[in-house]
Amino acid sequence: MDILITGIMMGTFYALLALGLSLIFGILKVVNFAHGEFFMIGAYAYALIALKLGISPFLVLFPVIVIGMIVGVAVERVLMRPLYEKYTEWGAMRDEYAIIVTFGLSLFLMNLANQIFGPYPISGPGLVPLRERVTLGHMVMMSAHRIIAFGIGAGVLIAAYLFLRFAPSGKVIQAVSQNRFGASIAGINSSRVSMIVFGISGTLAGLSGALLCPIFSAEPFVGALPAIKSFVIVVLGGMGSVPGSILGAYLLGVLEQFGAVYISYSYRDTFGFVILILVLLLRPQGIFGEKAREV
Image 1 (cartoon, rainbow, N blue to C red):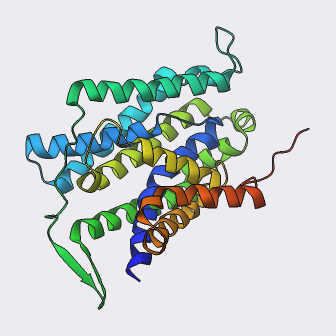
Image 2: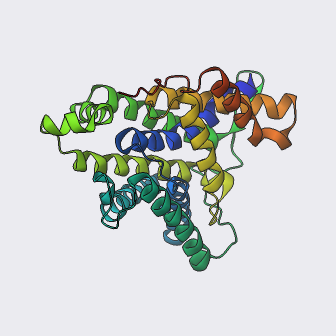
C-alpha cells in the first residue's frame, strides 16, 4: 500500500509539470525544451526567498507562483512570437525555430544559474520540519512535508483541470488548441491565449519545483530529469491531451515506485521509457492521442 501511495504522490508532481508542457504543445504544436528550467527557477525561488528573507514556506509559494507566471509570459512575449507566422523573418521553418530557441534558452538558463549560484545544491526548508512524520493506517509512515505538498499539488491540479474544462477562459484555450485558425475567425485572440498558456505552464512547473525543492534541492541542472519525464508523459498520454498527460503522470509515478521496490531502485528512471516503448508499439498516437490525418 505504501508503494502505491508514494507512486500516486509522485504522479501528482509529474502531472503538475507535464500539464504545462502538454498545454503548450496543444496551442502552438511545438515542444518547449526549456520546460525543465521553469521547474529549476521555481526551486531556486522557493529556496532563496525562504532562506534569505526568512518567510514562512507556505507564504513563499505565492511569490513562486507569480515568478513562474512572469517567466512563462516573458518567454512567450520575447521568444515565441515568430511562431505565429508560418515562417520566421529569416526564412527558418517554425518547428526548427522552436527547437533551436527553446533548446538554446534551456542551455542559457542552466549556465546562468551555474554562474550565479554555483554548482552546489541549495536545500529549501520543508513546509513543516522534514523530521516530522505522519502514520497512515497501520503500515505507511511518511514525512509530513511530502503529504502537505501532495495535498497542495493535488488541489492545484484539480483546480487547473476544472478551469480548463468548465471556465469560459478554459474553453477558449480548448478552442484554440483544436483549431487555431478557426478560433481566430471566431474572434478569439490566439496570441493572448498563447501568452496565458505559457503563464500557466510557468506557474505549474515553478510550483512543482518549489514543492519538491526540500526533497531534491535546487541546483542548475535539477530540471533536466523532470523535463525528460514530462516529455515521456506527454507522449505516453497523447501529444496535447490534458487527460492523457494526467493519466500518464500517474502511470509513470506508480510504475517507477513498484519497479524500484520489486526490480531495482537503480533502474527507476528507465521504467518510464520501457512503458513508453510498449505503448508506442501498440498505440503510436499515445493513450488519448488521435491519429494524424493528411488531407
